[in-house]
Each structure stands twice: as structure tokens, then as C-alpha cells.
Amino acid sequence: MNKASKLRSLPAVDELVNGDTLQEIVAQFPRPQVVGWARAAIDAARAKLLAEEACSPDQIVATVRALAAAERGRSINRVINATGVLLHTNLGRAPLADRAIERIEQATKYSNVELDLNNGKRSKRGERAAQLIAGLAGAEDAIVVNNCAAATMLVLSGIAGIDVRNAPPVLAGGLQPAGKEVIVSRGQLVEIGGGFRLPDVFRAAGVVLREVGTTNRTHLRDYETAIGEHTGAILRVHRSNFFQGGFVTEPSIDEMVAIKRPKDVPVIDDLGSGCFYDLSEFGLREPVVVESVKCGADLSLFSGDKLFGGPQCGMIVGRKNWIQKLRTHPMMRAMRVDKVTLAALEATAEIHLSGTAFEEIPVLQMIAKKASDIQAACHAFVKRVGSVAATLNVVPSESQVGGGSIPGATMPSFAVEVSGCKTQHVAQSLRTGTPAVQSRLTSDNLLLDLRSVDSADHDLLAHRLTESLQDAQQ
Ligand SMILES: *Cc1c(COP(=O)(O)O)cnc(C)c1O
Image: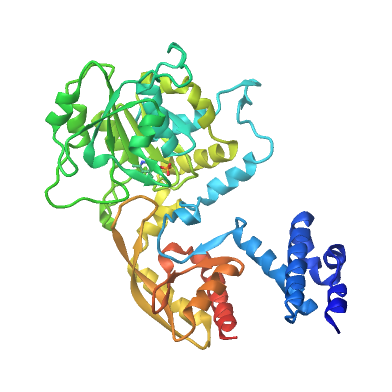
């Protein structure tokens, strides 16, 4: 065939999309997307033909399949987390407890998110969840927002920002009316990640940052001498994604609470990880929410999807007067959580209240796993994989909590080490199959750390590994 007739033989877009070869893809994706991929594949084929390169009809179909596969890899799907990082932000942080998942199922269609079924009257969204959280924390009151970053923003704005209802209007290009000062140690001016840097957050909240102390040492007297007529609050931020060692000091939360200050200057404790238990028996140290409240912090903030083991949300617990002030702040309406989140949160809080958190909440179950049990599970796992063209060994590993909590702390664990094969290919195949598997790939081997894998998924993971090893051989 000459070039002109080859070009004429290219399929039309509709013809390709309606043809037998793409029906599986048409059934899975919105038609306009498939049409777009078909057009791109035909254009690429035309370009090849014009450049006198070979291009078969099969290649056009293969291009559409590849584009569809790439789209599948970007759509949100279940992933088996074999990284050993329990709270992996890329993998959605805390896996939810079964009870929370069941409750989500209840809430997804119509649900009584703002309706009291007892009297048929309108109820306050999130009130029950807030009561459960306040009860757990031993606090007077609580409020739930979209994440802990939102909690920080709301607290700064609501406590020390401008009085939005009475402030003078801002003129374009004119000076912003300033809020009050919030005192924070220079050692705690953190970047949480994703561009969320405290000095910027202060500015965005309309609050004046009053930094005290030095990077490594901040003393009580630094806070005390900074308190003045413009002080709106004192903030402590837990260093949850880095650590300091050596010549360092900073006051504890109970010392900070004891600082002499006007009645309207609260101490705010940004705890981050939302730990409710002493985890020292597992070699982990993290501030406990109940302790922060008990020490007298006026407001304590934490995430829902870190060590609390619930859905993404941020919780603020503390004194009634401050919480009430936040509840009526206009920003609150923009930060309120969805019914699905509230359903999962209620269920997770109930589990904590029932005292069954270490049996029911996945992240806590994983923290409590004994290394020897993980080792035994790894050996059983290797047996299930059967005969493959690779070497599988059970090796010691180190799991991390991750997700911006307990930086640097690791838990002894065990992993299945895969070597003697094309590990990059195996990792790719694991990731792109169903269900997807995220492994830990190092320069010379591939590890599957079973601490972060639910034992109910071991069979499935063994199957996926067998499949991926075969796949990588081809
Ligand atoms: C993780 C963390 C946050 C942010 O929490 P998100 O729920 O991810 O928004 C804020 N402060 C501290 C101290 C944290 O550890």
C-alpha cells in the first residue's frame, strides 16, 4: 500500500469506538473520554504514517488501551498498602474501621444529618459527633471541621483575627485591619506540607505573628515578656513531622497554661496526630489529647485521620466559651464537614468510647501487632505464593507510623523480600493490577511489609504477587 491509501485506511473515530475491540473500555469509561483517546490514537497513527513509519490497526487499539489503563491508575481505587507506613498520606492516611464503613453506607443517600428523628425538628449538624469527641477528650465542648489545617485557620481567625462583624470595611489597596498577636515559639513555626506554612497561615487568618525564643530554645519567660495589650492567644504547635535534638528546650503544655495572662488570652495546643492512648509500650511517644485538655489547654486541635483512625477531619476541643465563638464564626460554614465524614466520625468515636479501639481501629491494631506474629505471617505468606522465578525471603523491616506523626520513630517489623527478578517491573505490575498494591522498592530489592496489610488481605496479596512475578518475566 502506498502512503495515501494507508492514510485512507485509518479508521474513523466513531468506527473505532463502536467497534468490537474497544467495547470493554466503552463499558468502563464515559464515552466522551473514549472518543478523546480514540482521536488521539488515530492522530498518532496518522503522524507515524506521514513520517513513513509503520503503524498497524492493532497499535491504534493498543494506544487506546494504554490511555484507558493510565486513566484507571489515576482514578481512586482500593490499594493494598505493603509499604509498612501505617498512615500514608498518599494512600489516604487512616483506613477506616468496619463499623465506620457500615455507618457511611447508612449516610450516603438521604440521612438525618440535620434532622432530629425524635421530634421531626431541625437539628444541629455534627452536634452528636462533637459531644462524643468532647466526652472522649474530657473537654467541655468540641467542634468538627474539614481537617486540622482548617482547625488551625479557624482558631487563629476566630480567636485572634479581626472581629468580622464589627470591623470597618477594607478599602481596595488599603490597609487591612489587623487582628491580635498570637505568640508562638520560633522552634514551632512549621511547614506541615502542601505549602501550609504557619507564617502564611497567620497572614491568611489576619493574625499578627509574634515569634518568641530561638529555633532551638524557647523559655517560659520568652512567652511571658511577649504578653501585652495586643496579645490574642498563645499557640503551641506539636512538632509532628520533624524532630529536634541536642541543646533544645521548650516549656511543656502545663507550664504554658500556668503563664500569667489576661483571661481572654487562651492557650491553644495544636497536637496534630490526635493520639488518645499512651503508646509507649509500642516504643512510640506522642502527646495525648486527654492530657492536653487535663493540663488546662483552652483549645486543643487534632486530625481525625491520623492516630484517631477516623475520616479526614479536624477536631477542636476545649472550653465552651471559645468553642461557641468559633461555632458562630462565618468561616465555620465554609469548613463544615459532610454527612459521610460525620457518619464515619460518630462510629469511630463510639469505638474509642467503647474501649475497643485496639481491636477495631485498623491503625491501632497495626501498631499493636507483635513483630513475631508479623514474622510468622510472612512465612505463611511465602508458602502461599508458590513456585516463582524469584527469591522470596522473610527479613526484618522497620514500619513507620507516618502521615505527619511521630517523626523518625519506627516499629520493628518483618517483610517479604523479593529479589532475583526485575523488581521495578514487579512493583509496577503490583501497582497497576487489581487491587493495586503499593510495595516498598529499594535500589536492590522489593519489600512487602505485612504490618500495614490486613491479615484478611494476605491471600489476595499473595495472588497479586504471583501474578506480578509472572507478568514481569515476560
Ligand atoms: C498533621 C498536622 C496538621 C494538619 O492536619 P491535617 O488534618 O492534615 O490538616 C496540623 N498540625 C499538626 C501539628 C499536624 O501534625
